[in-house]
Length: 301
Ligand SMILES: [Zn+2]
Image (cartoon, rainbow, N blue to C red; front, side, top):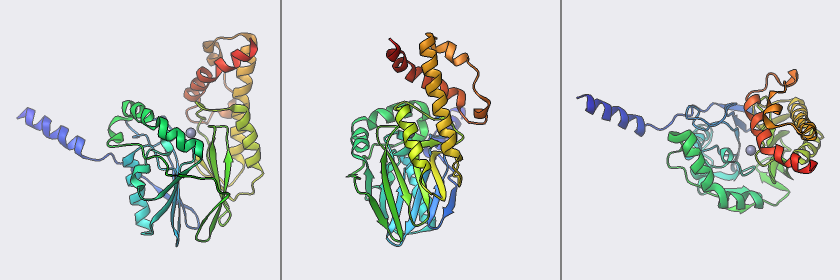
């Protein structure tokens, strides 16, 4: 009997789909936002750590980033369907990190667009991301397969109903980061060029280039800024915080390499108070130091 109960328990556990409990927020006319958790991938959050957005128009729907799994993508689509039954016309993958494109599978049939670099990177390395995430996130990754973008985005604008979206081809967080500026609503979608109140992930970053890009973003007269991680903001605060953090990171790496410090000595240095409310600060700072320090050490020699 006990054995049967256990079997029943296990079957019910594995047949129930992971529930992301997505909360959709209307942030501007026709514009919706789903915020990811300010955490690292885990079994508990099912990999829901990045933001997704969508714009609804008479011409169809445009989705910006699709989350980190097929199940997430399906549940995002379900939320979109509560608002409109217009077809999903476009999906944009802002860059090649897995929390931004592994939900593509749920949007088969749409024009899935990314920069050439991002499209190629996803086609080549998408499966490696899945293997890695299955190990960390496990159950919520069920049935996830790579659906790479099917169109290279290289135009200056995307027109969608009343919405005219200006496309900016930038870099710094990765080699190719897409930014969309909706001239109808004034919403600026900056992808992972900004992590707001959540420490930045830097595995493919070029810090100097990233700071230059952020200075460009500062000039755009947006009404609302939507970052890849963290809440939306009407102010310039997310850009200022991001520049400040990257400058701190760059400086500590430079100074430490000149002094010949070891990684563990750098990690012991007390961080400035201005960053104290940023989520994941210690974890991401450590990952960044381990990843970036060898490059700074090479420059000194
Ligand atoms: Zn990213």
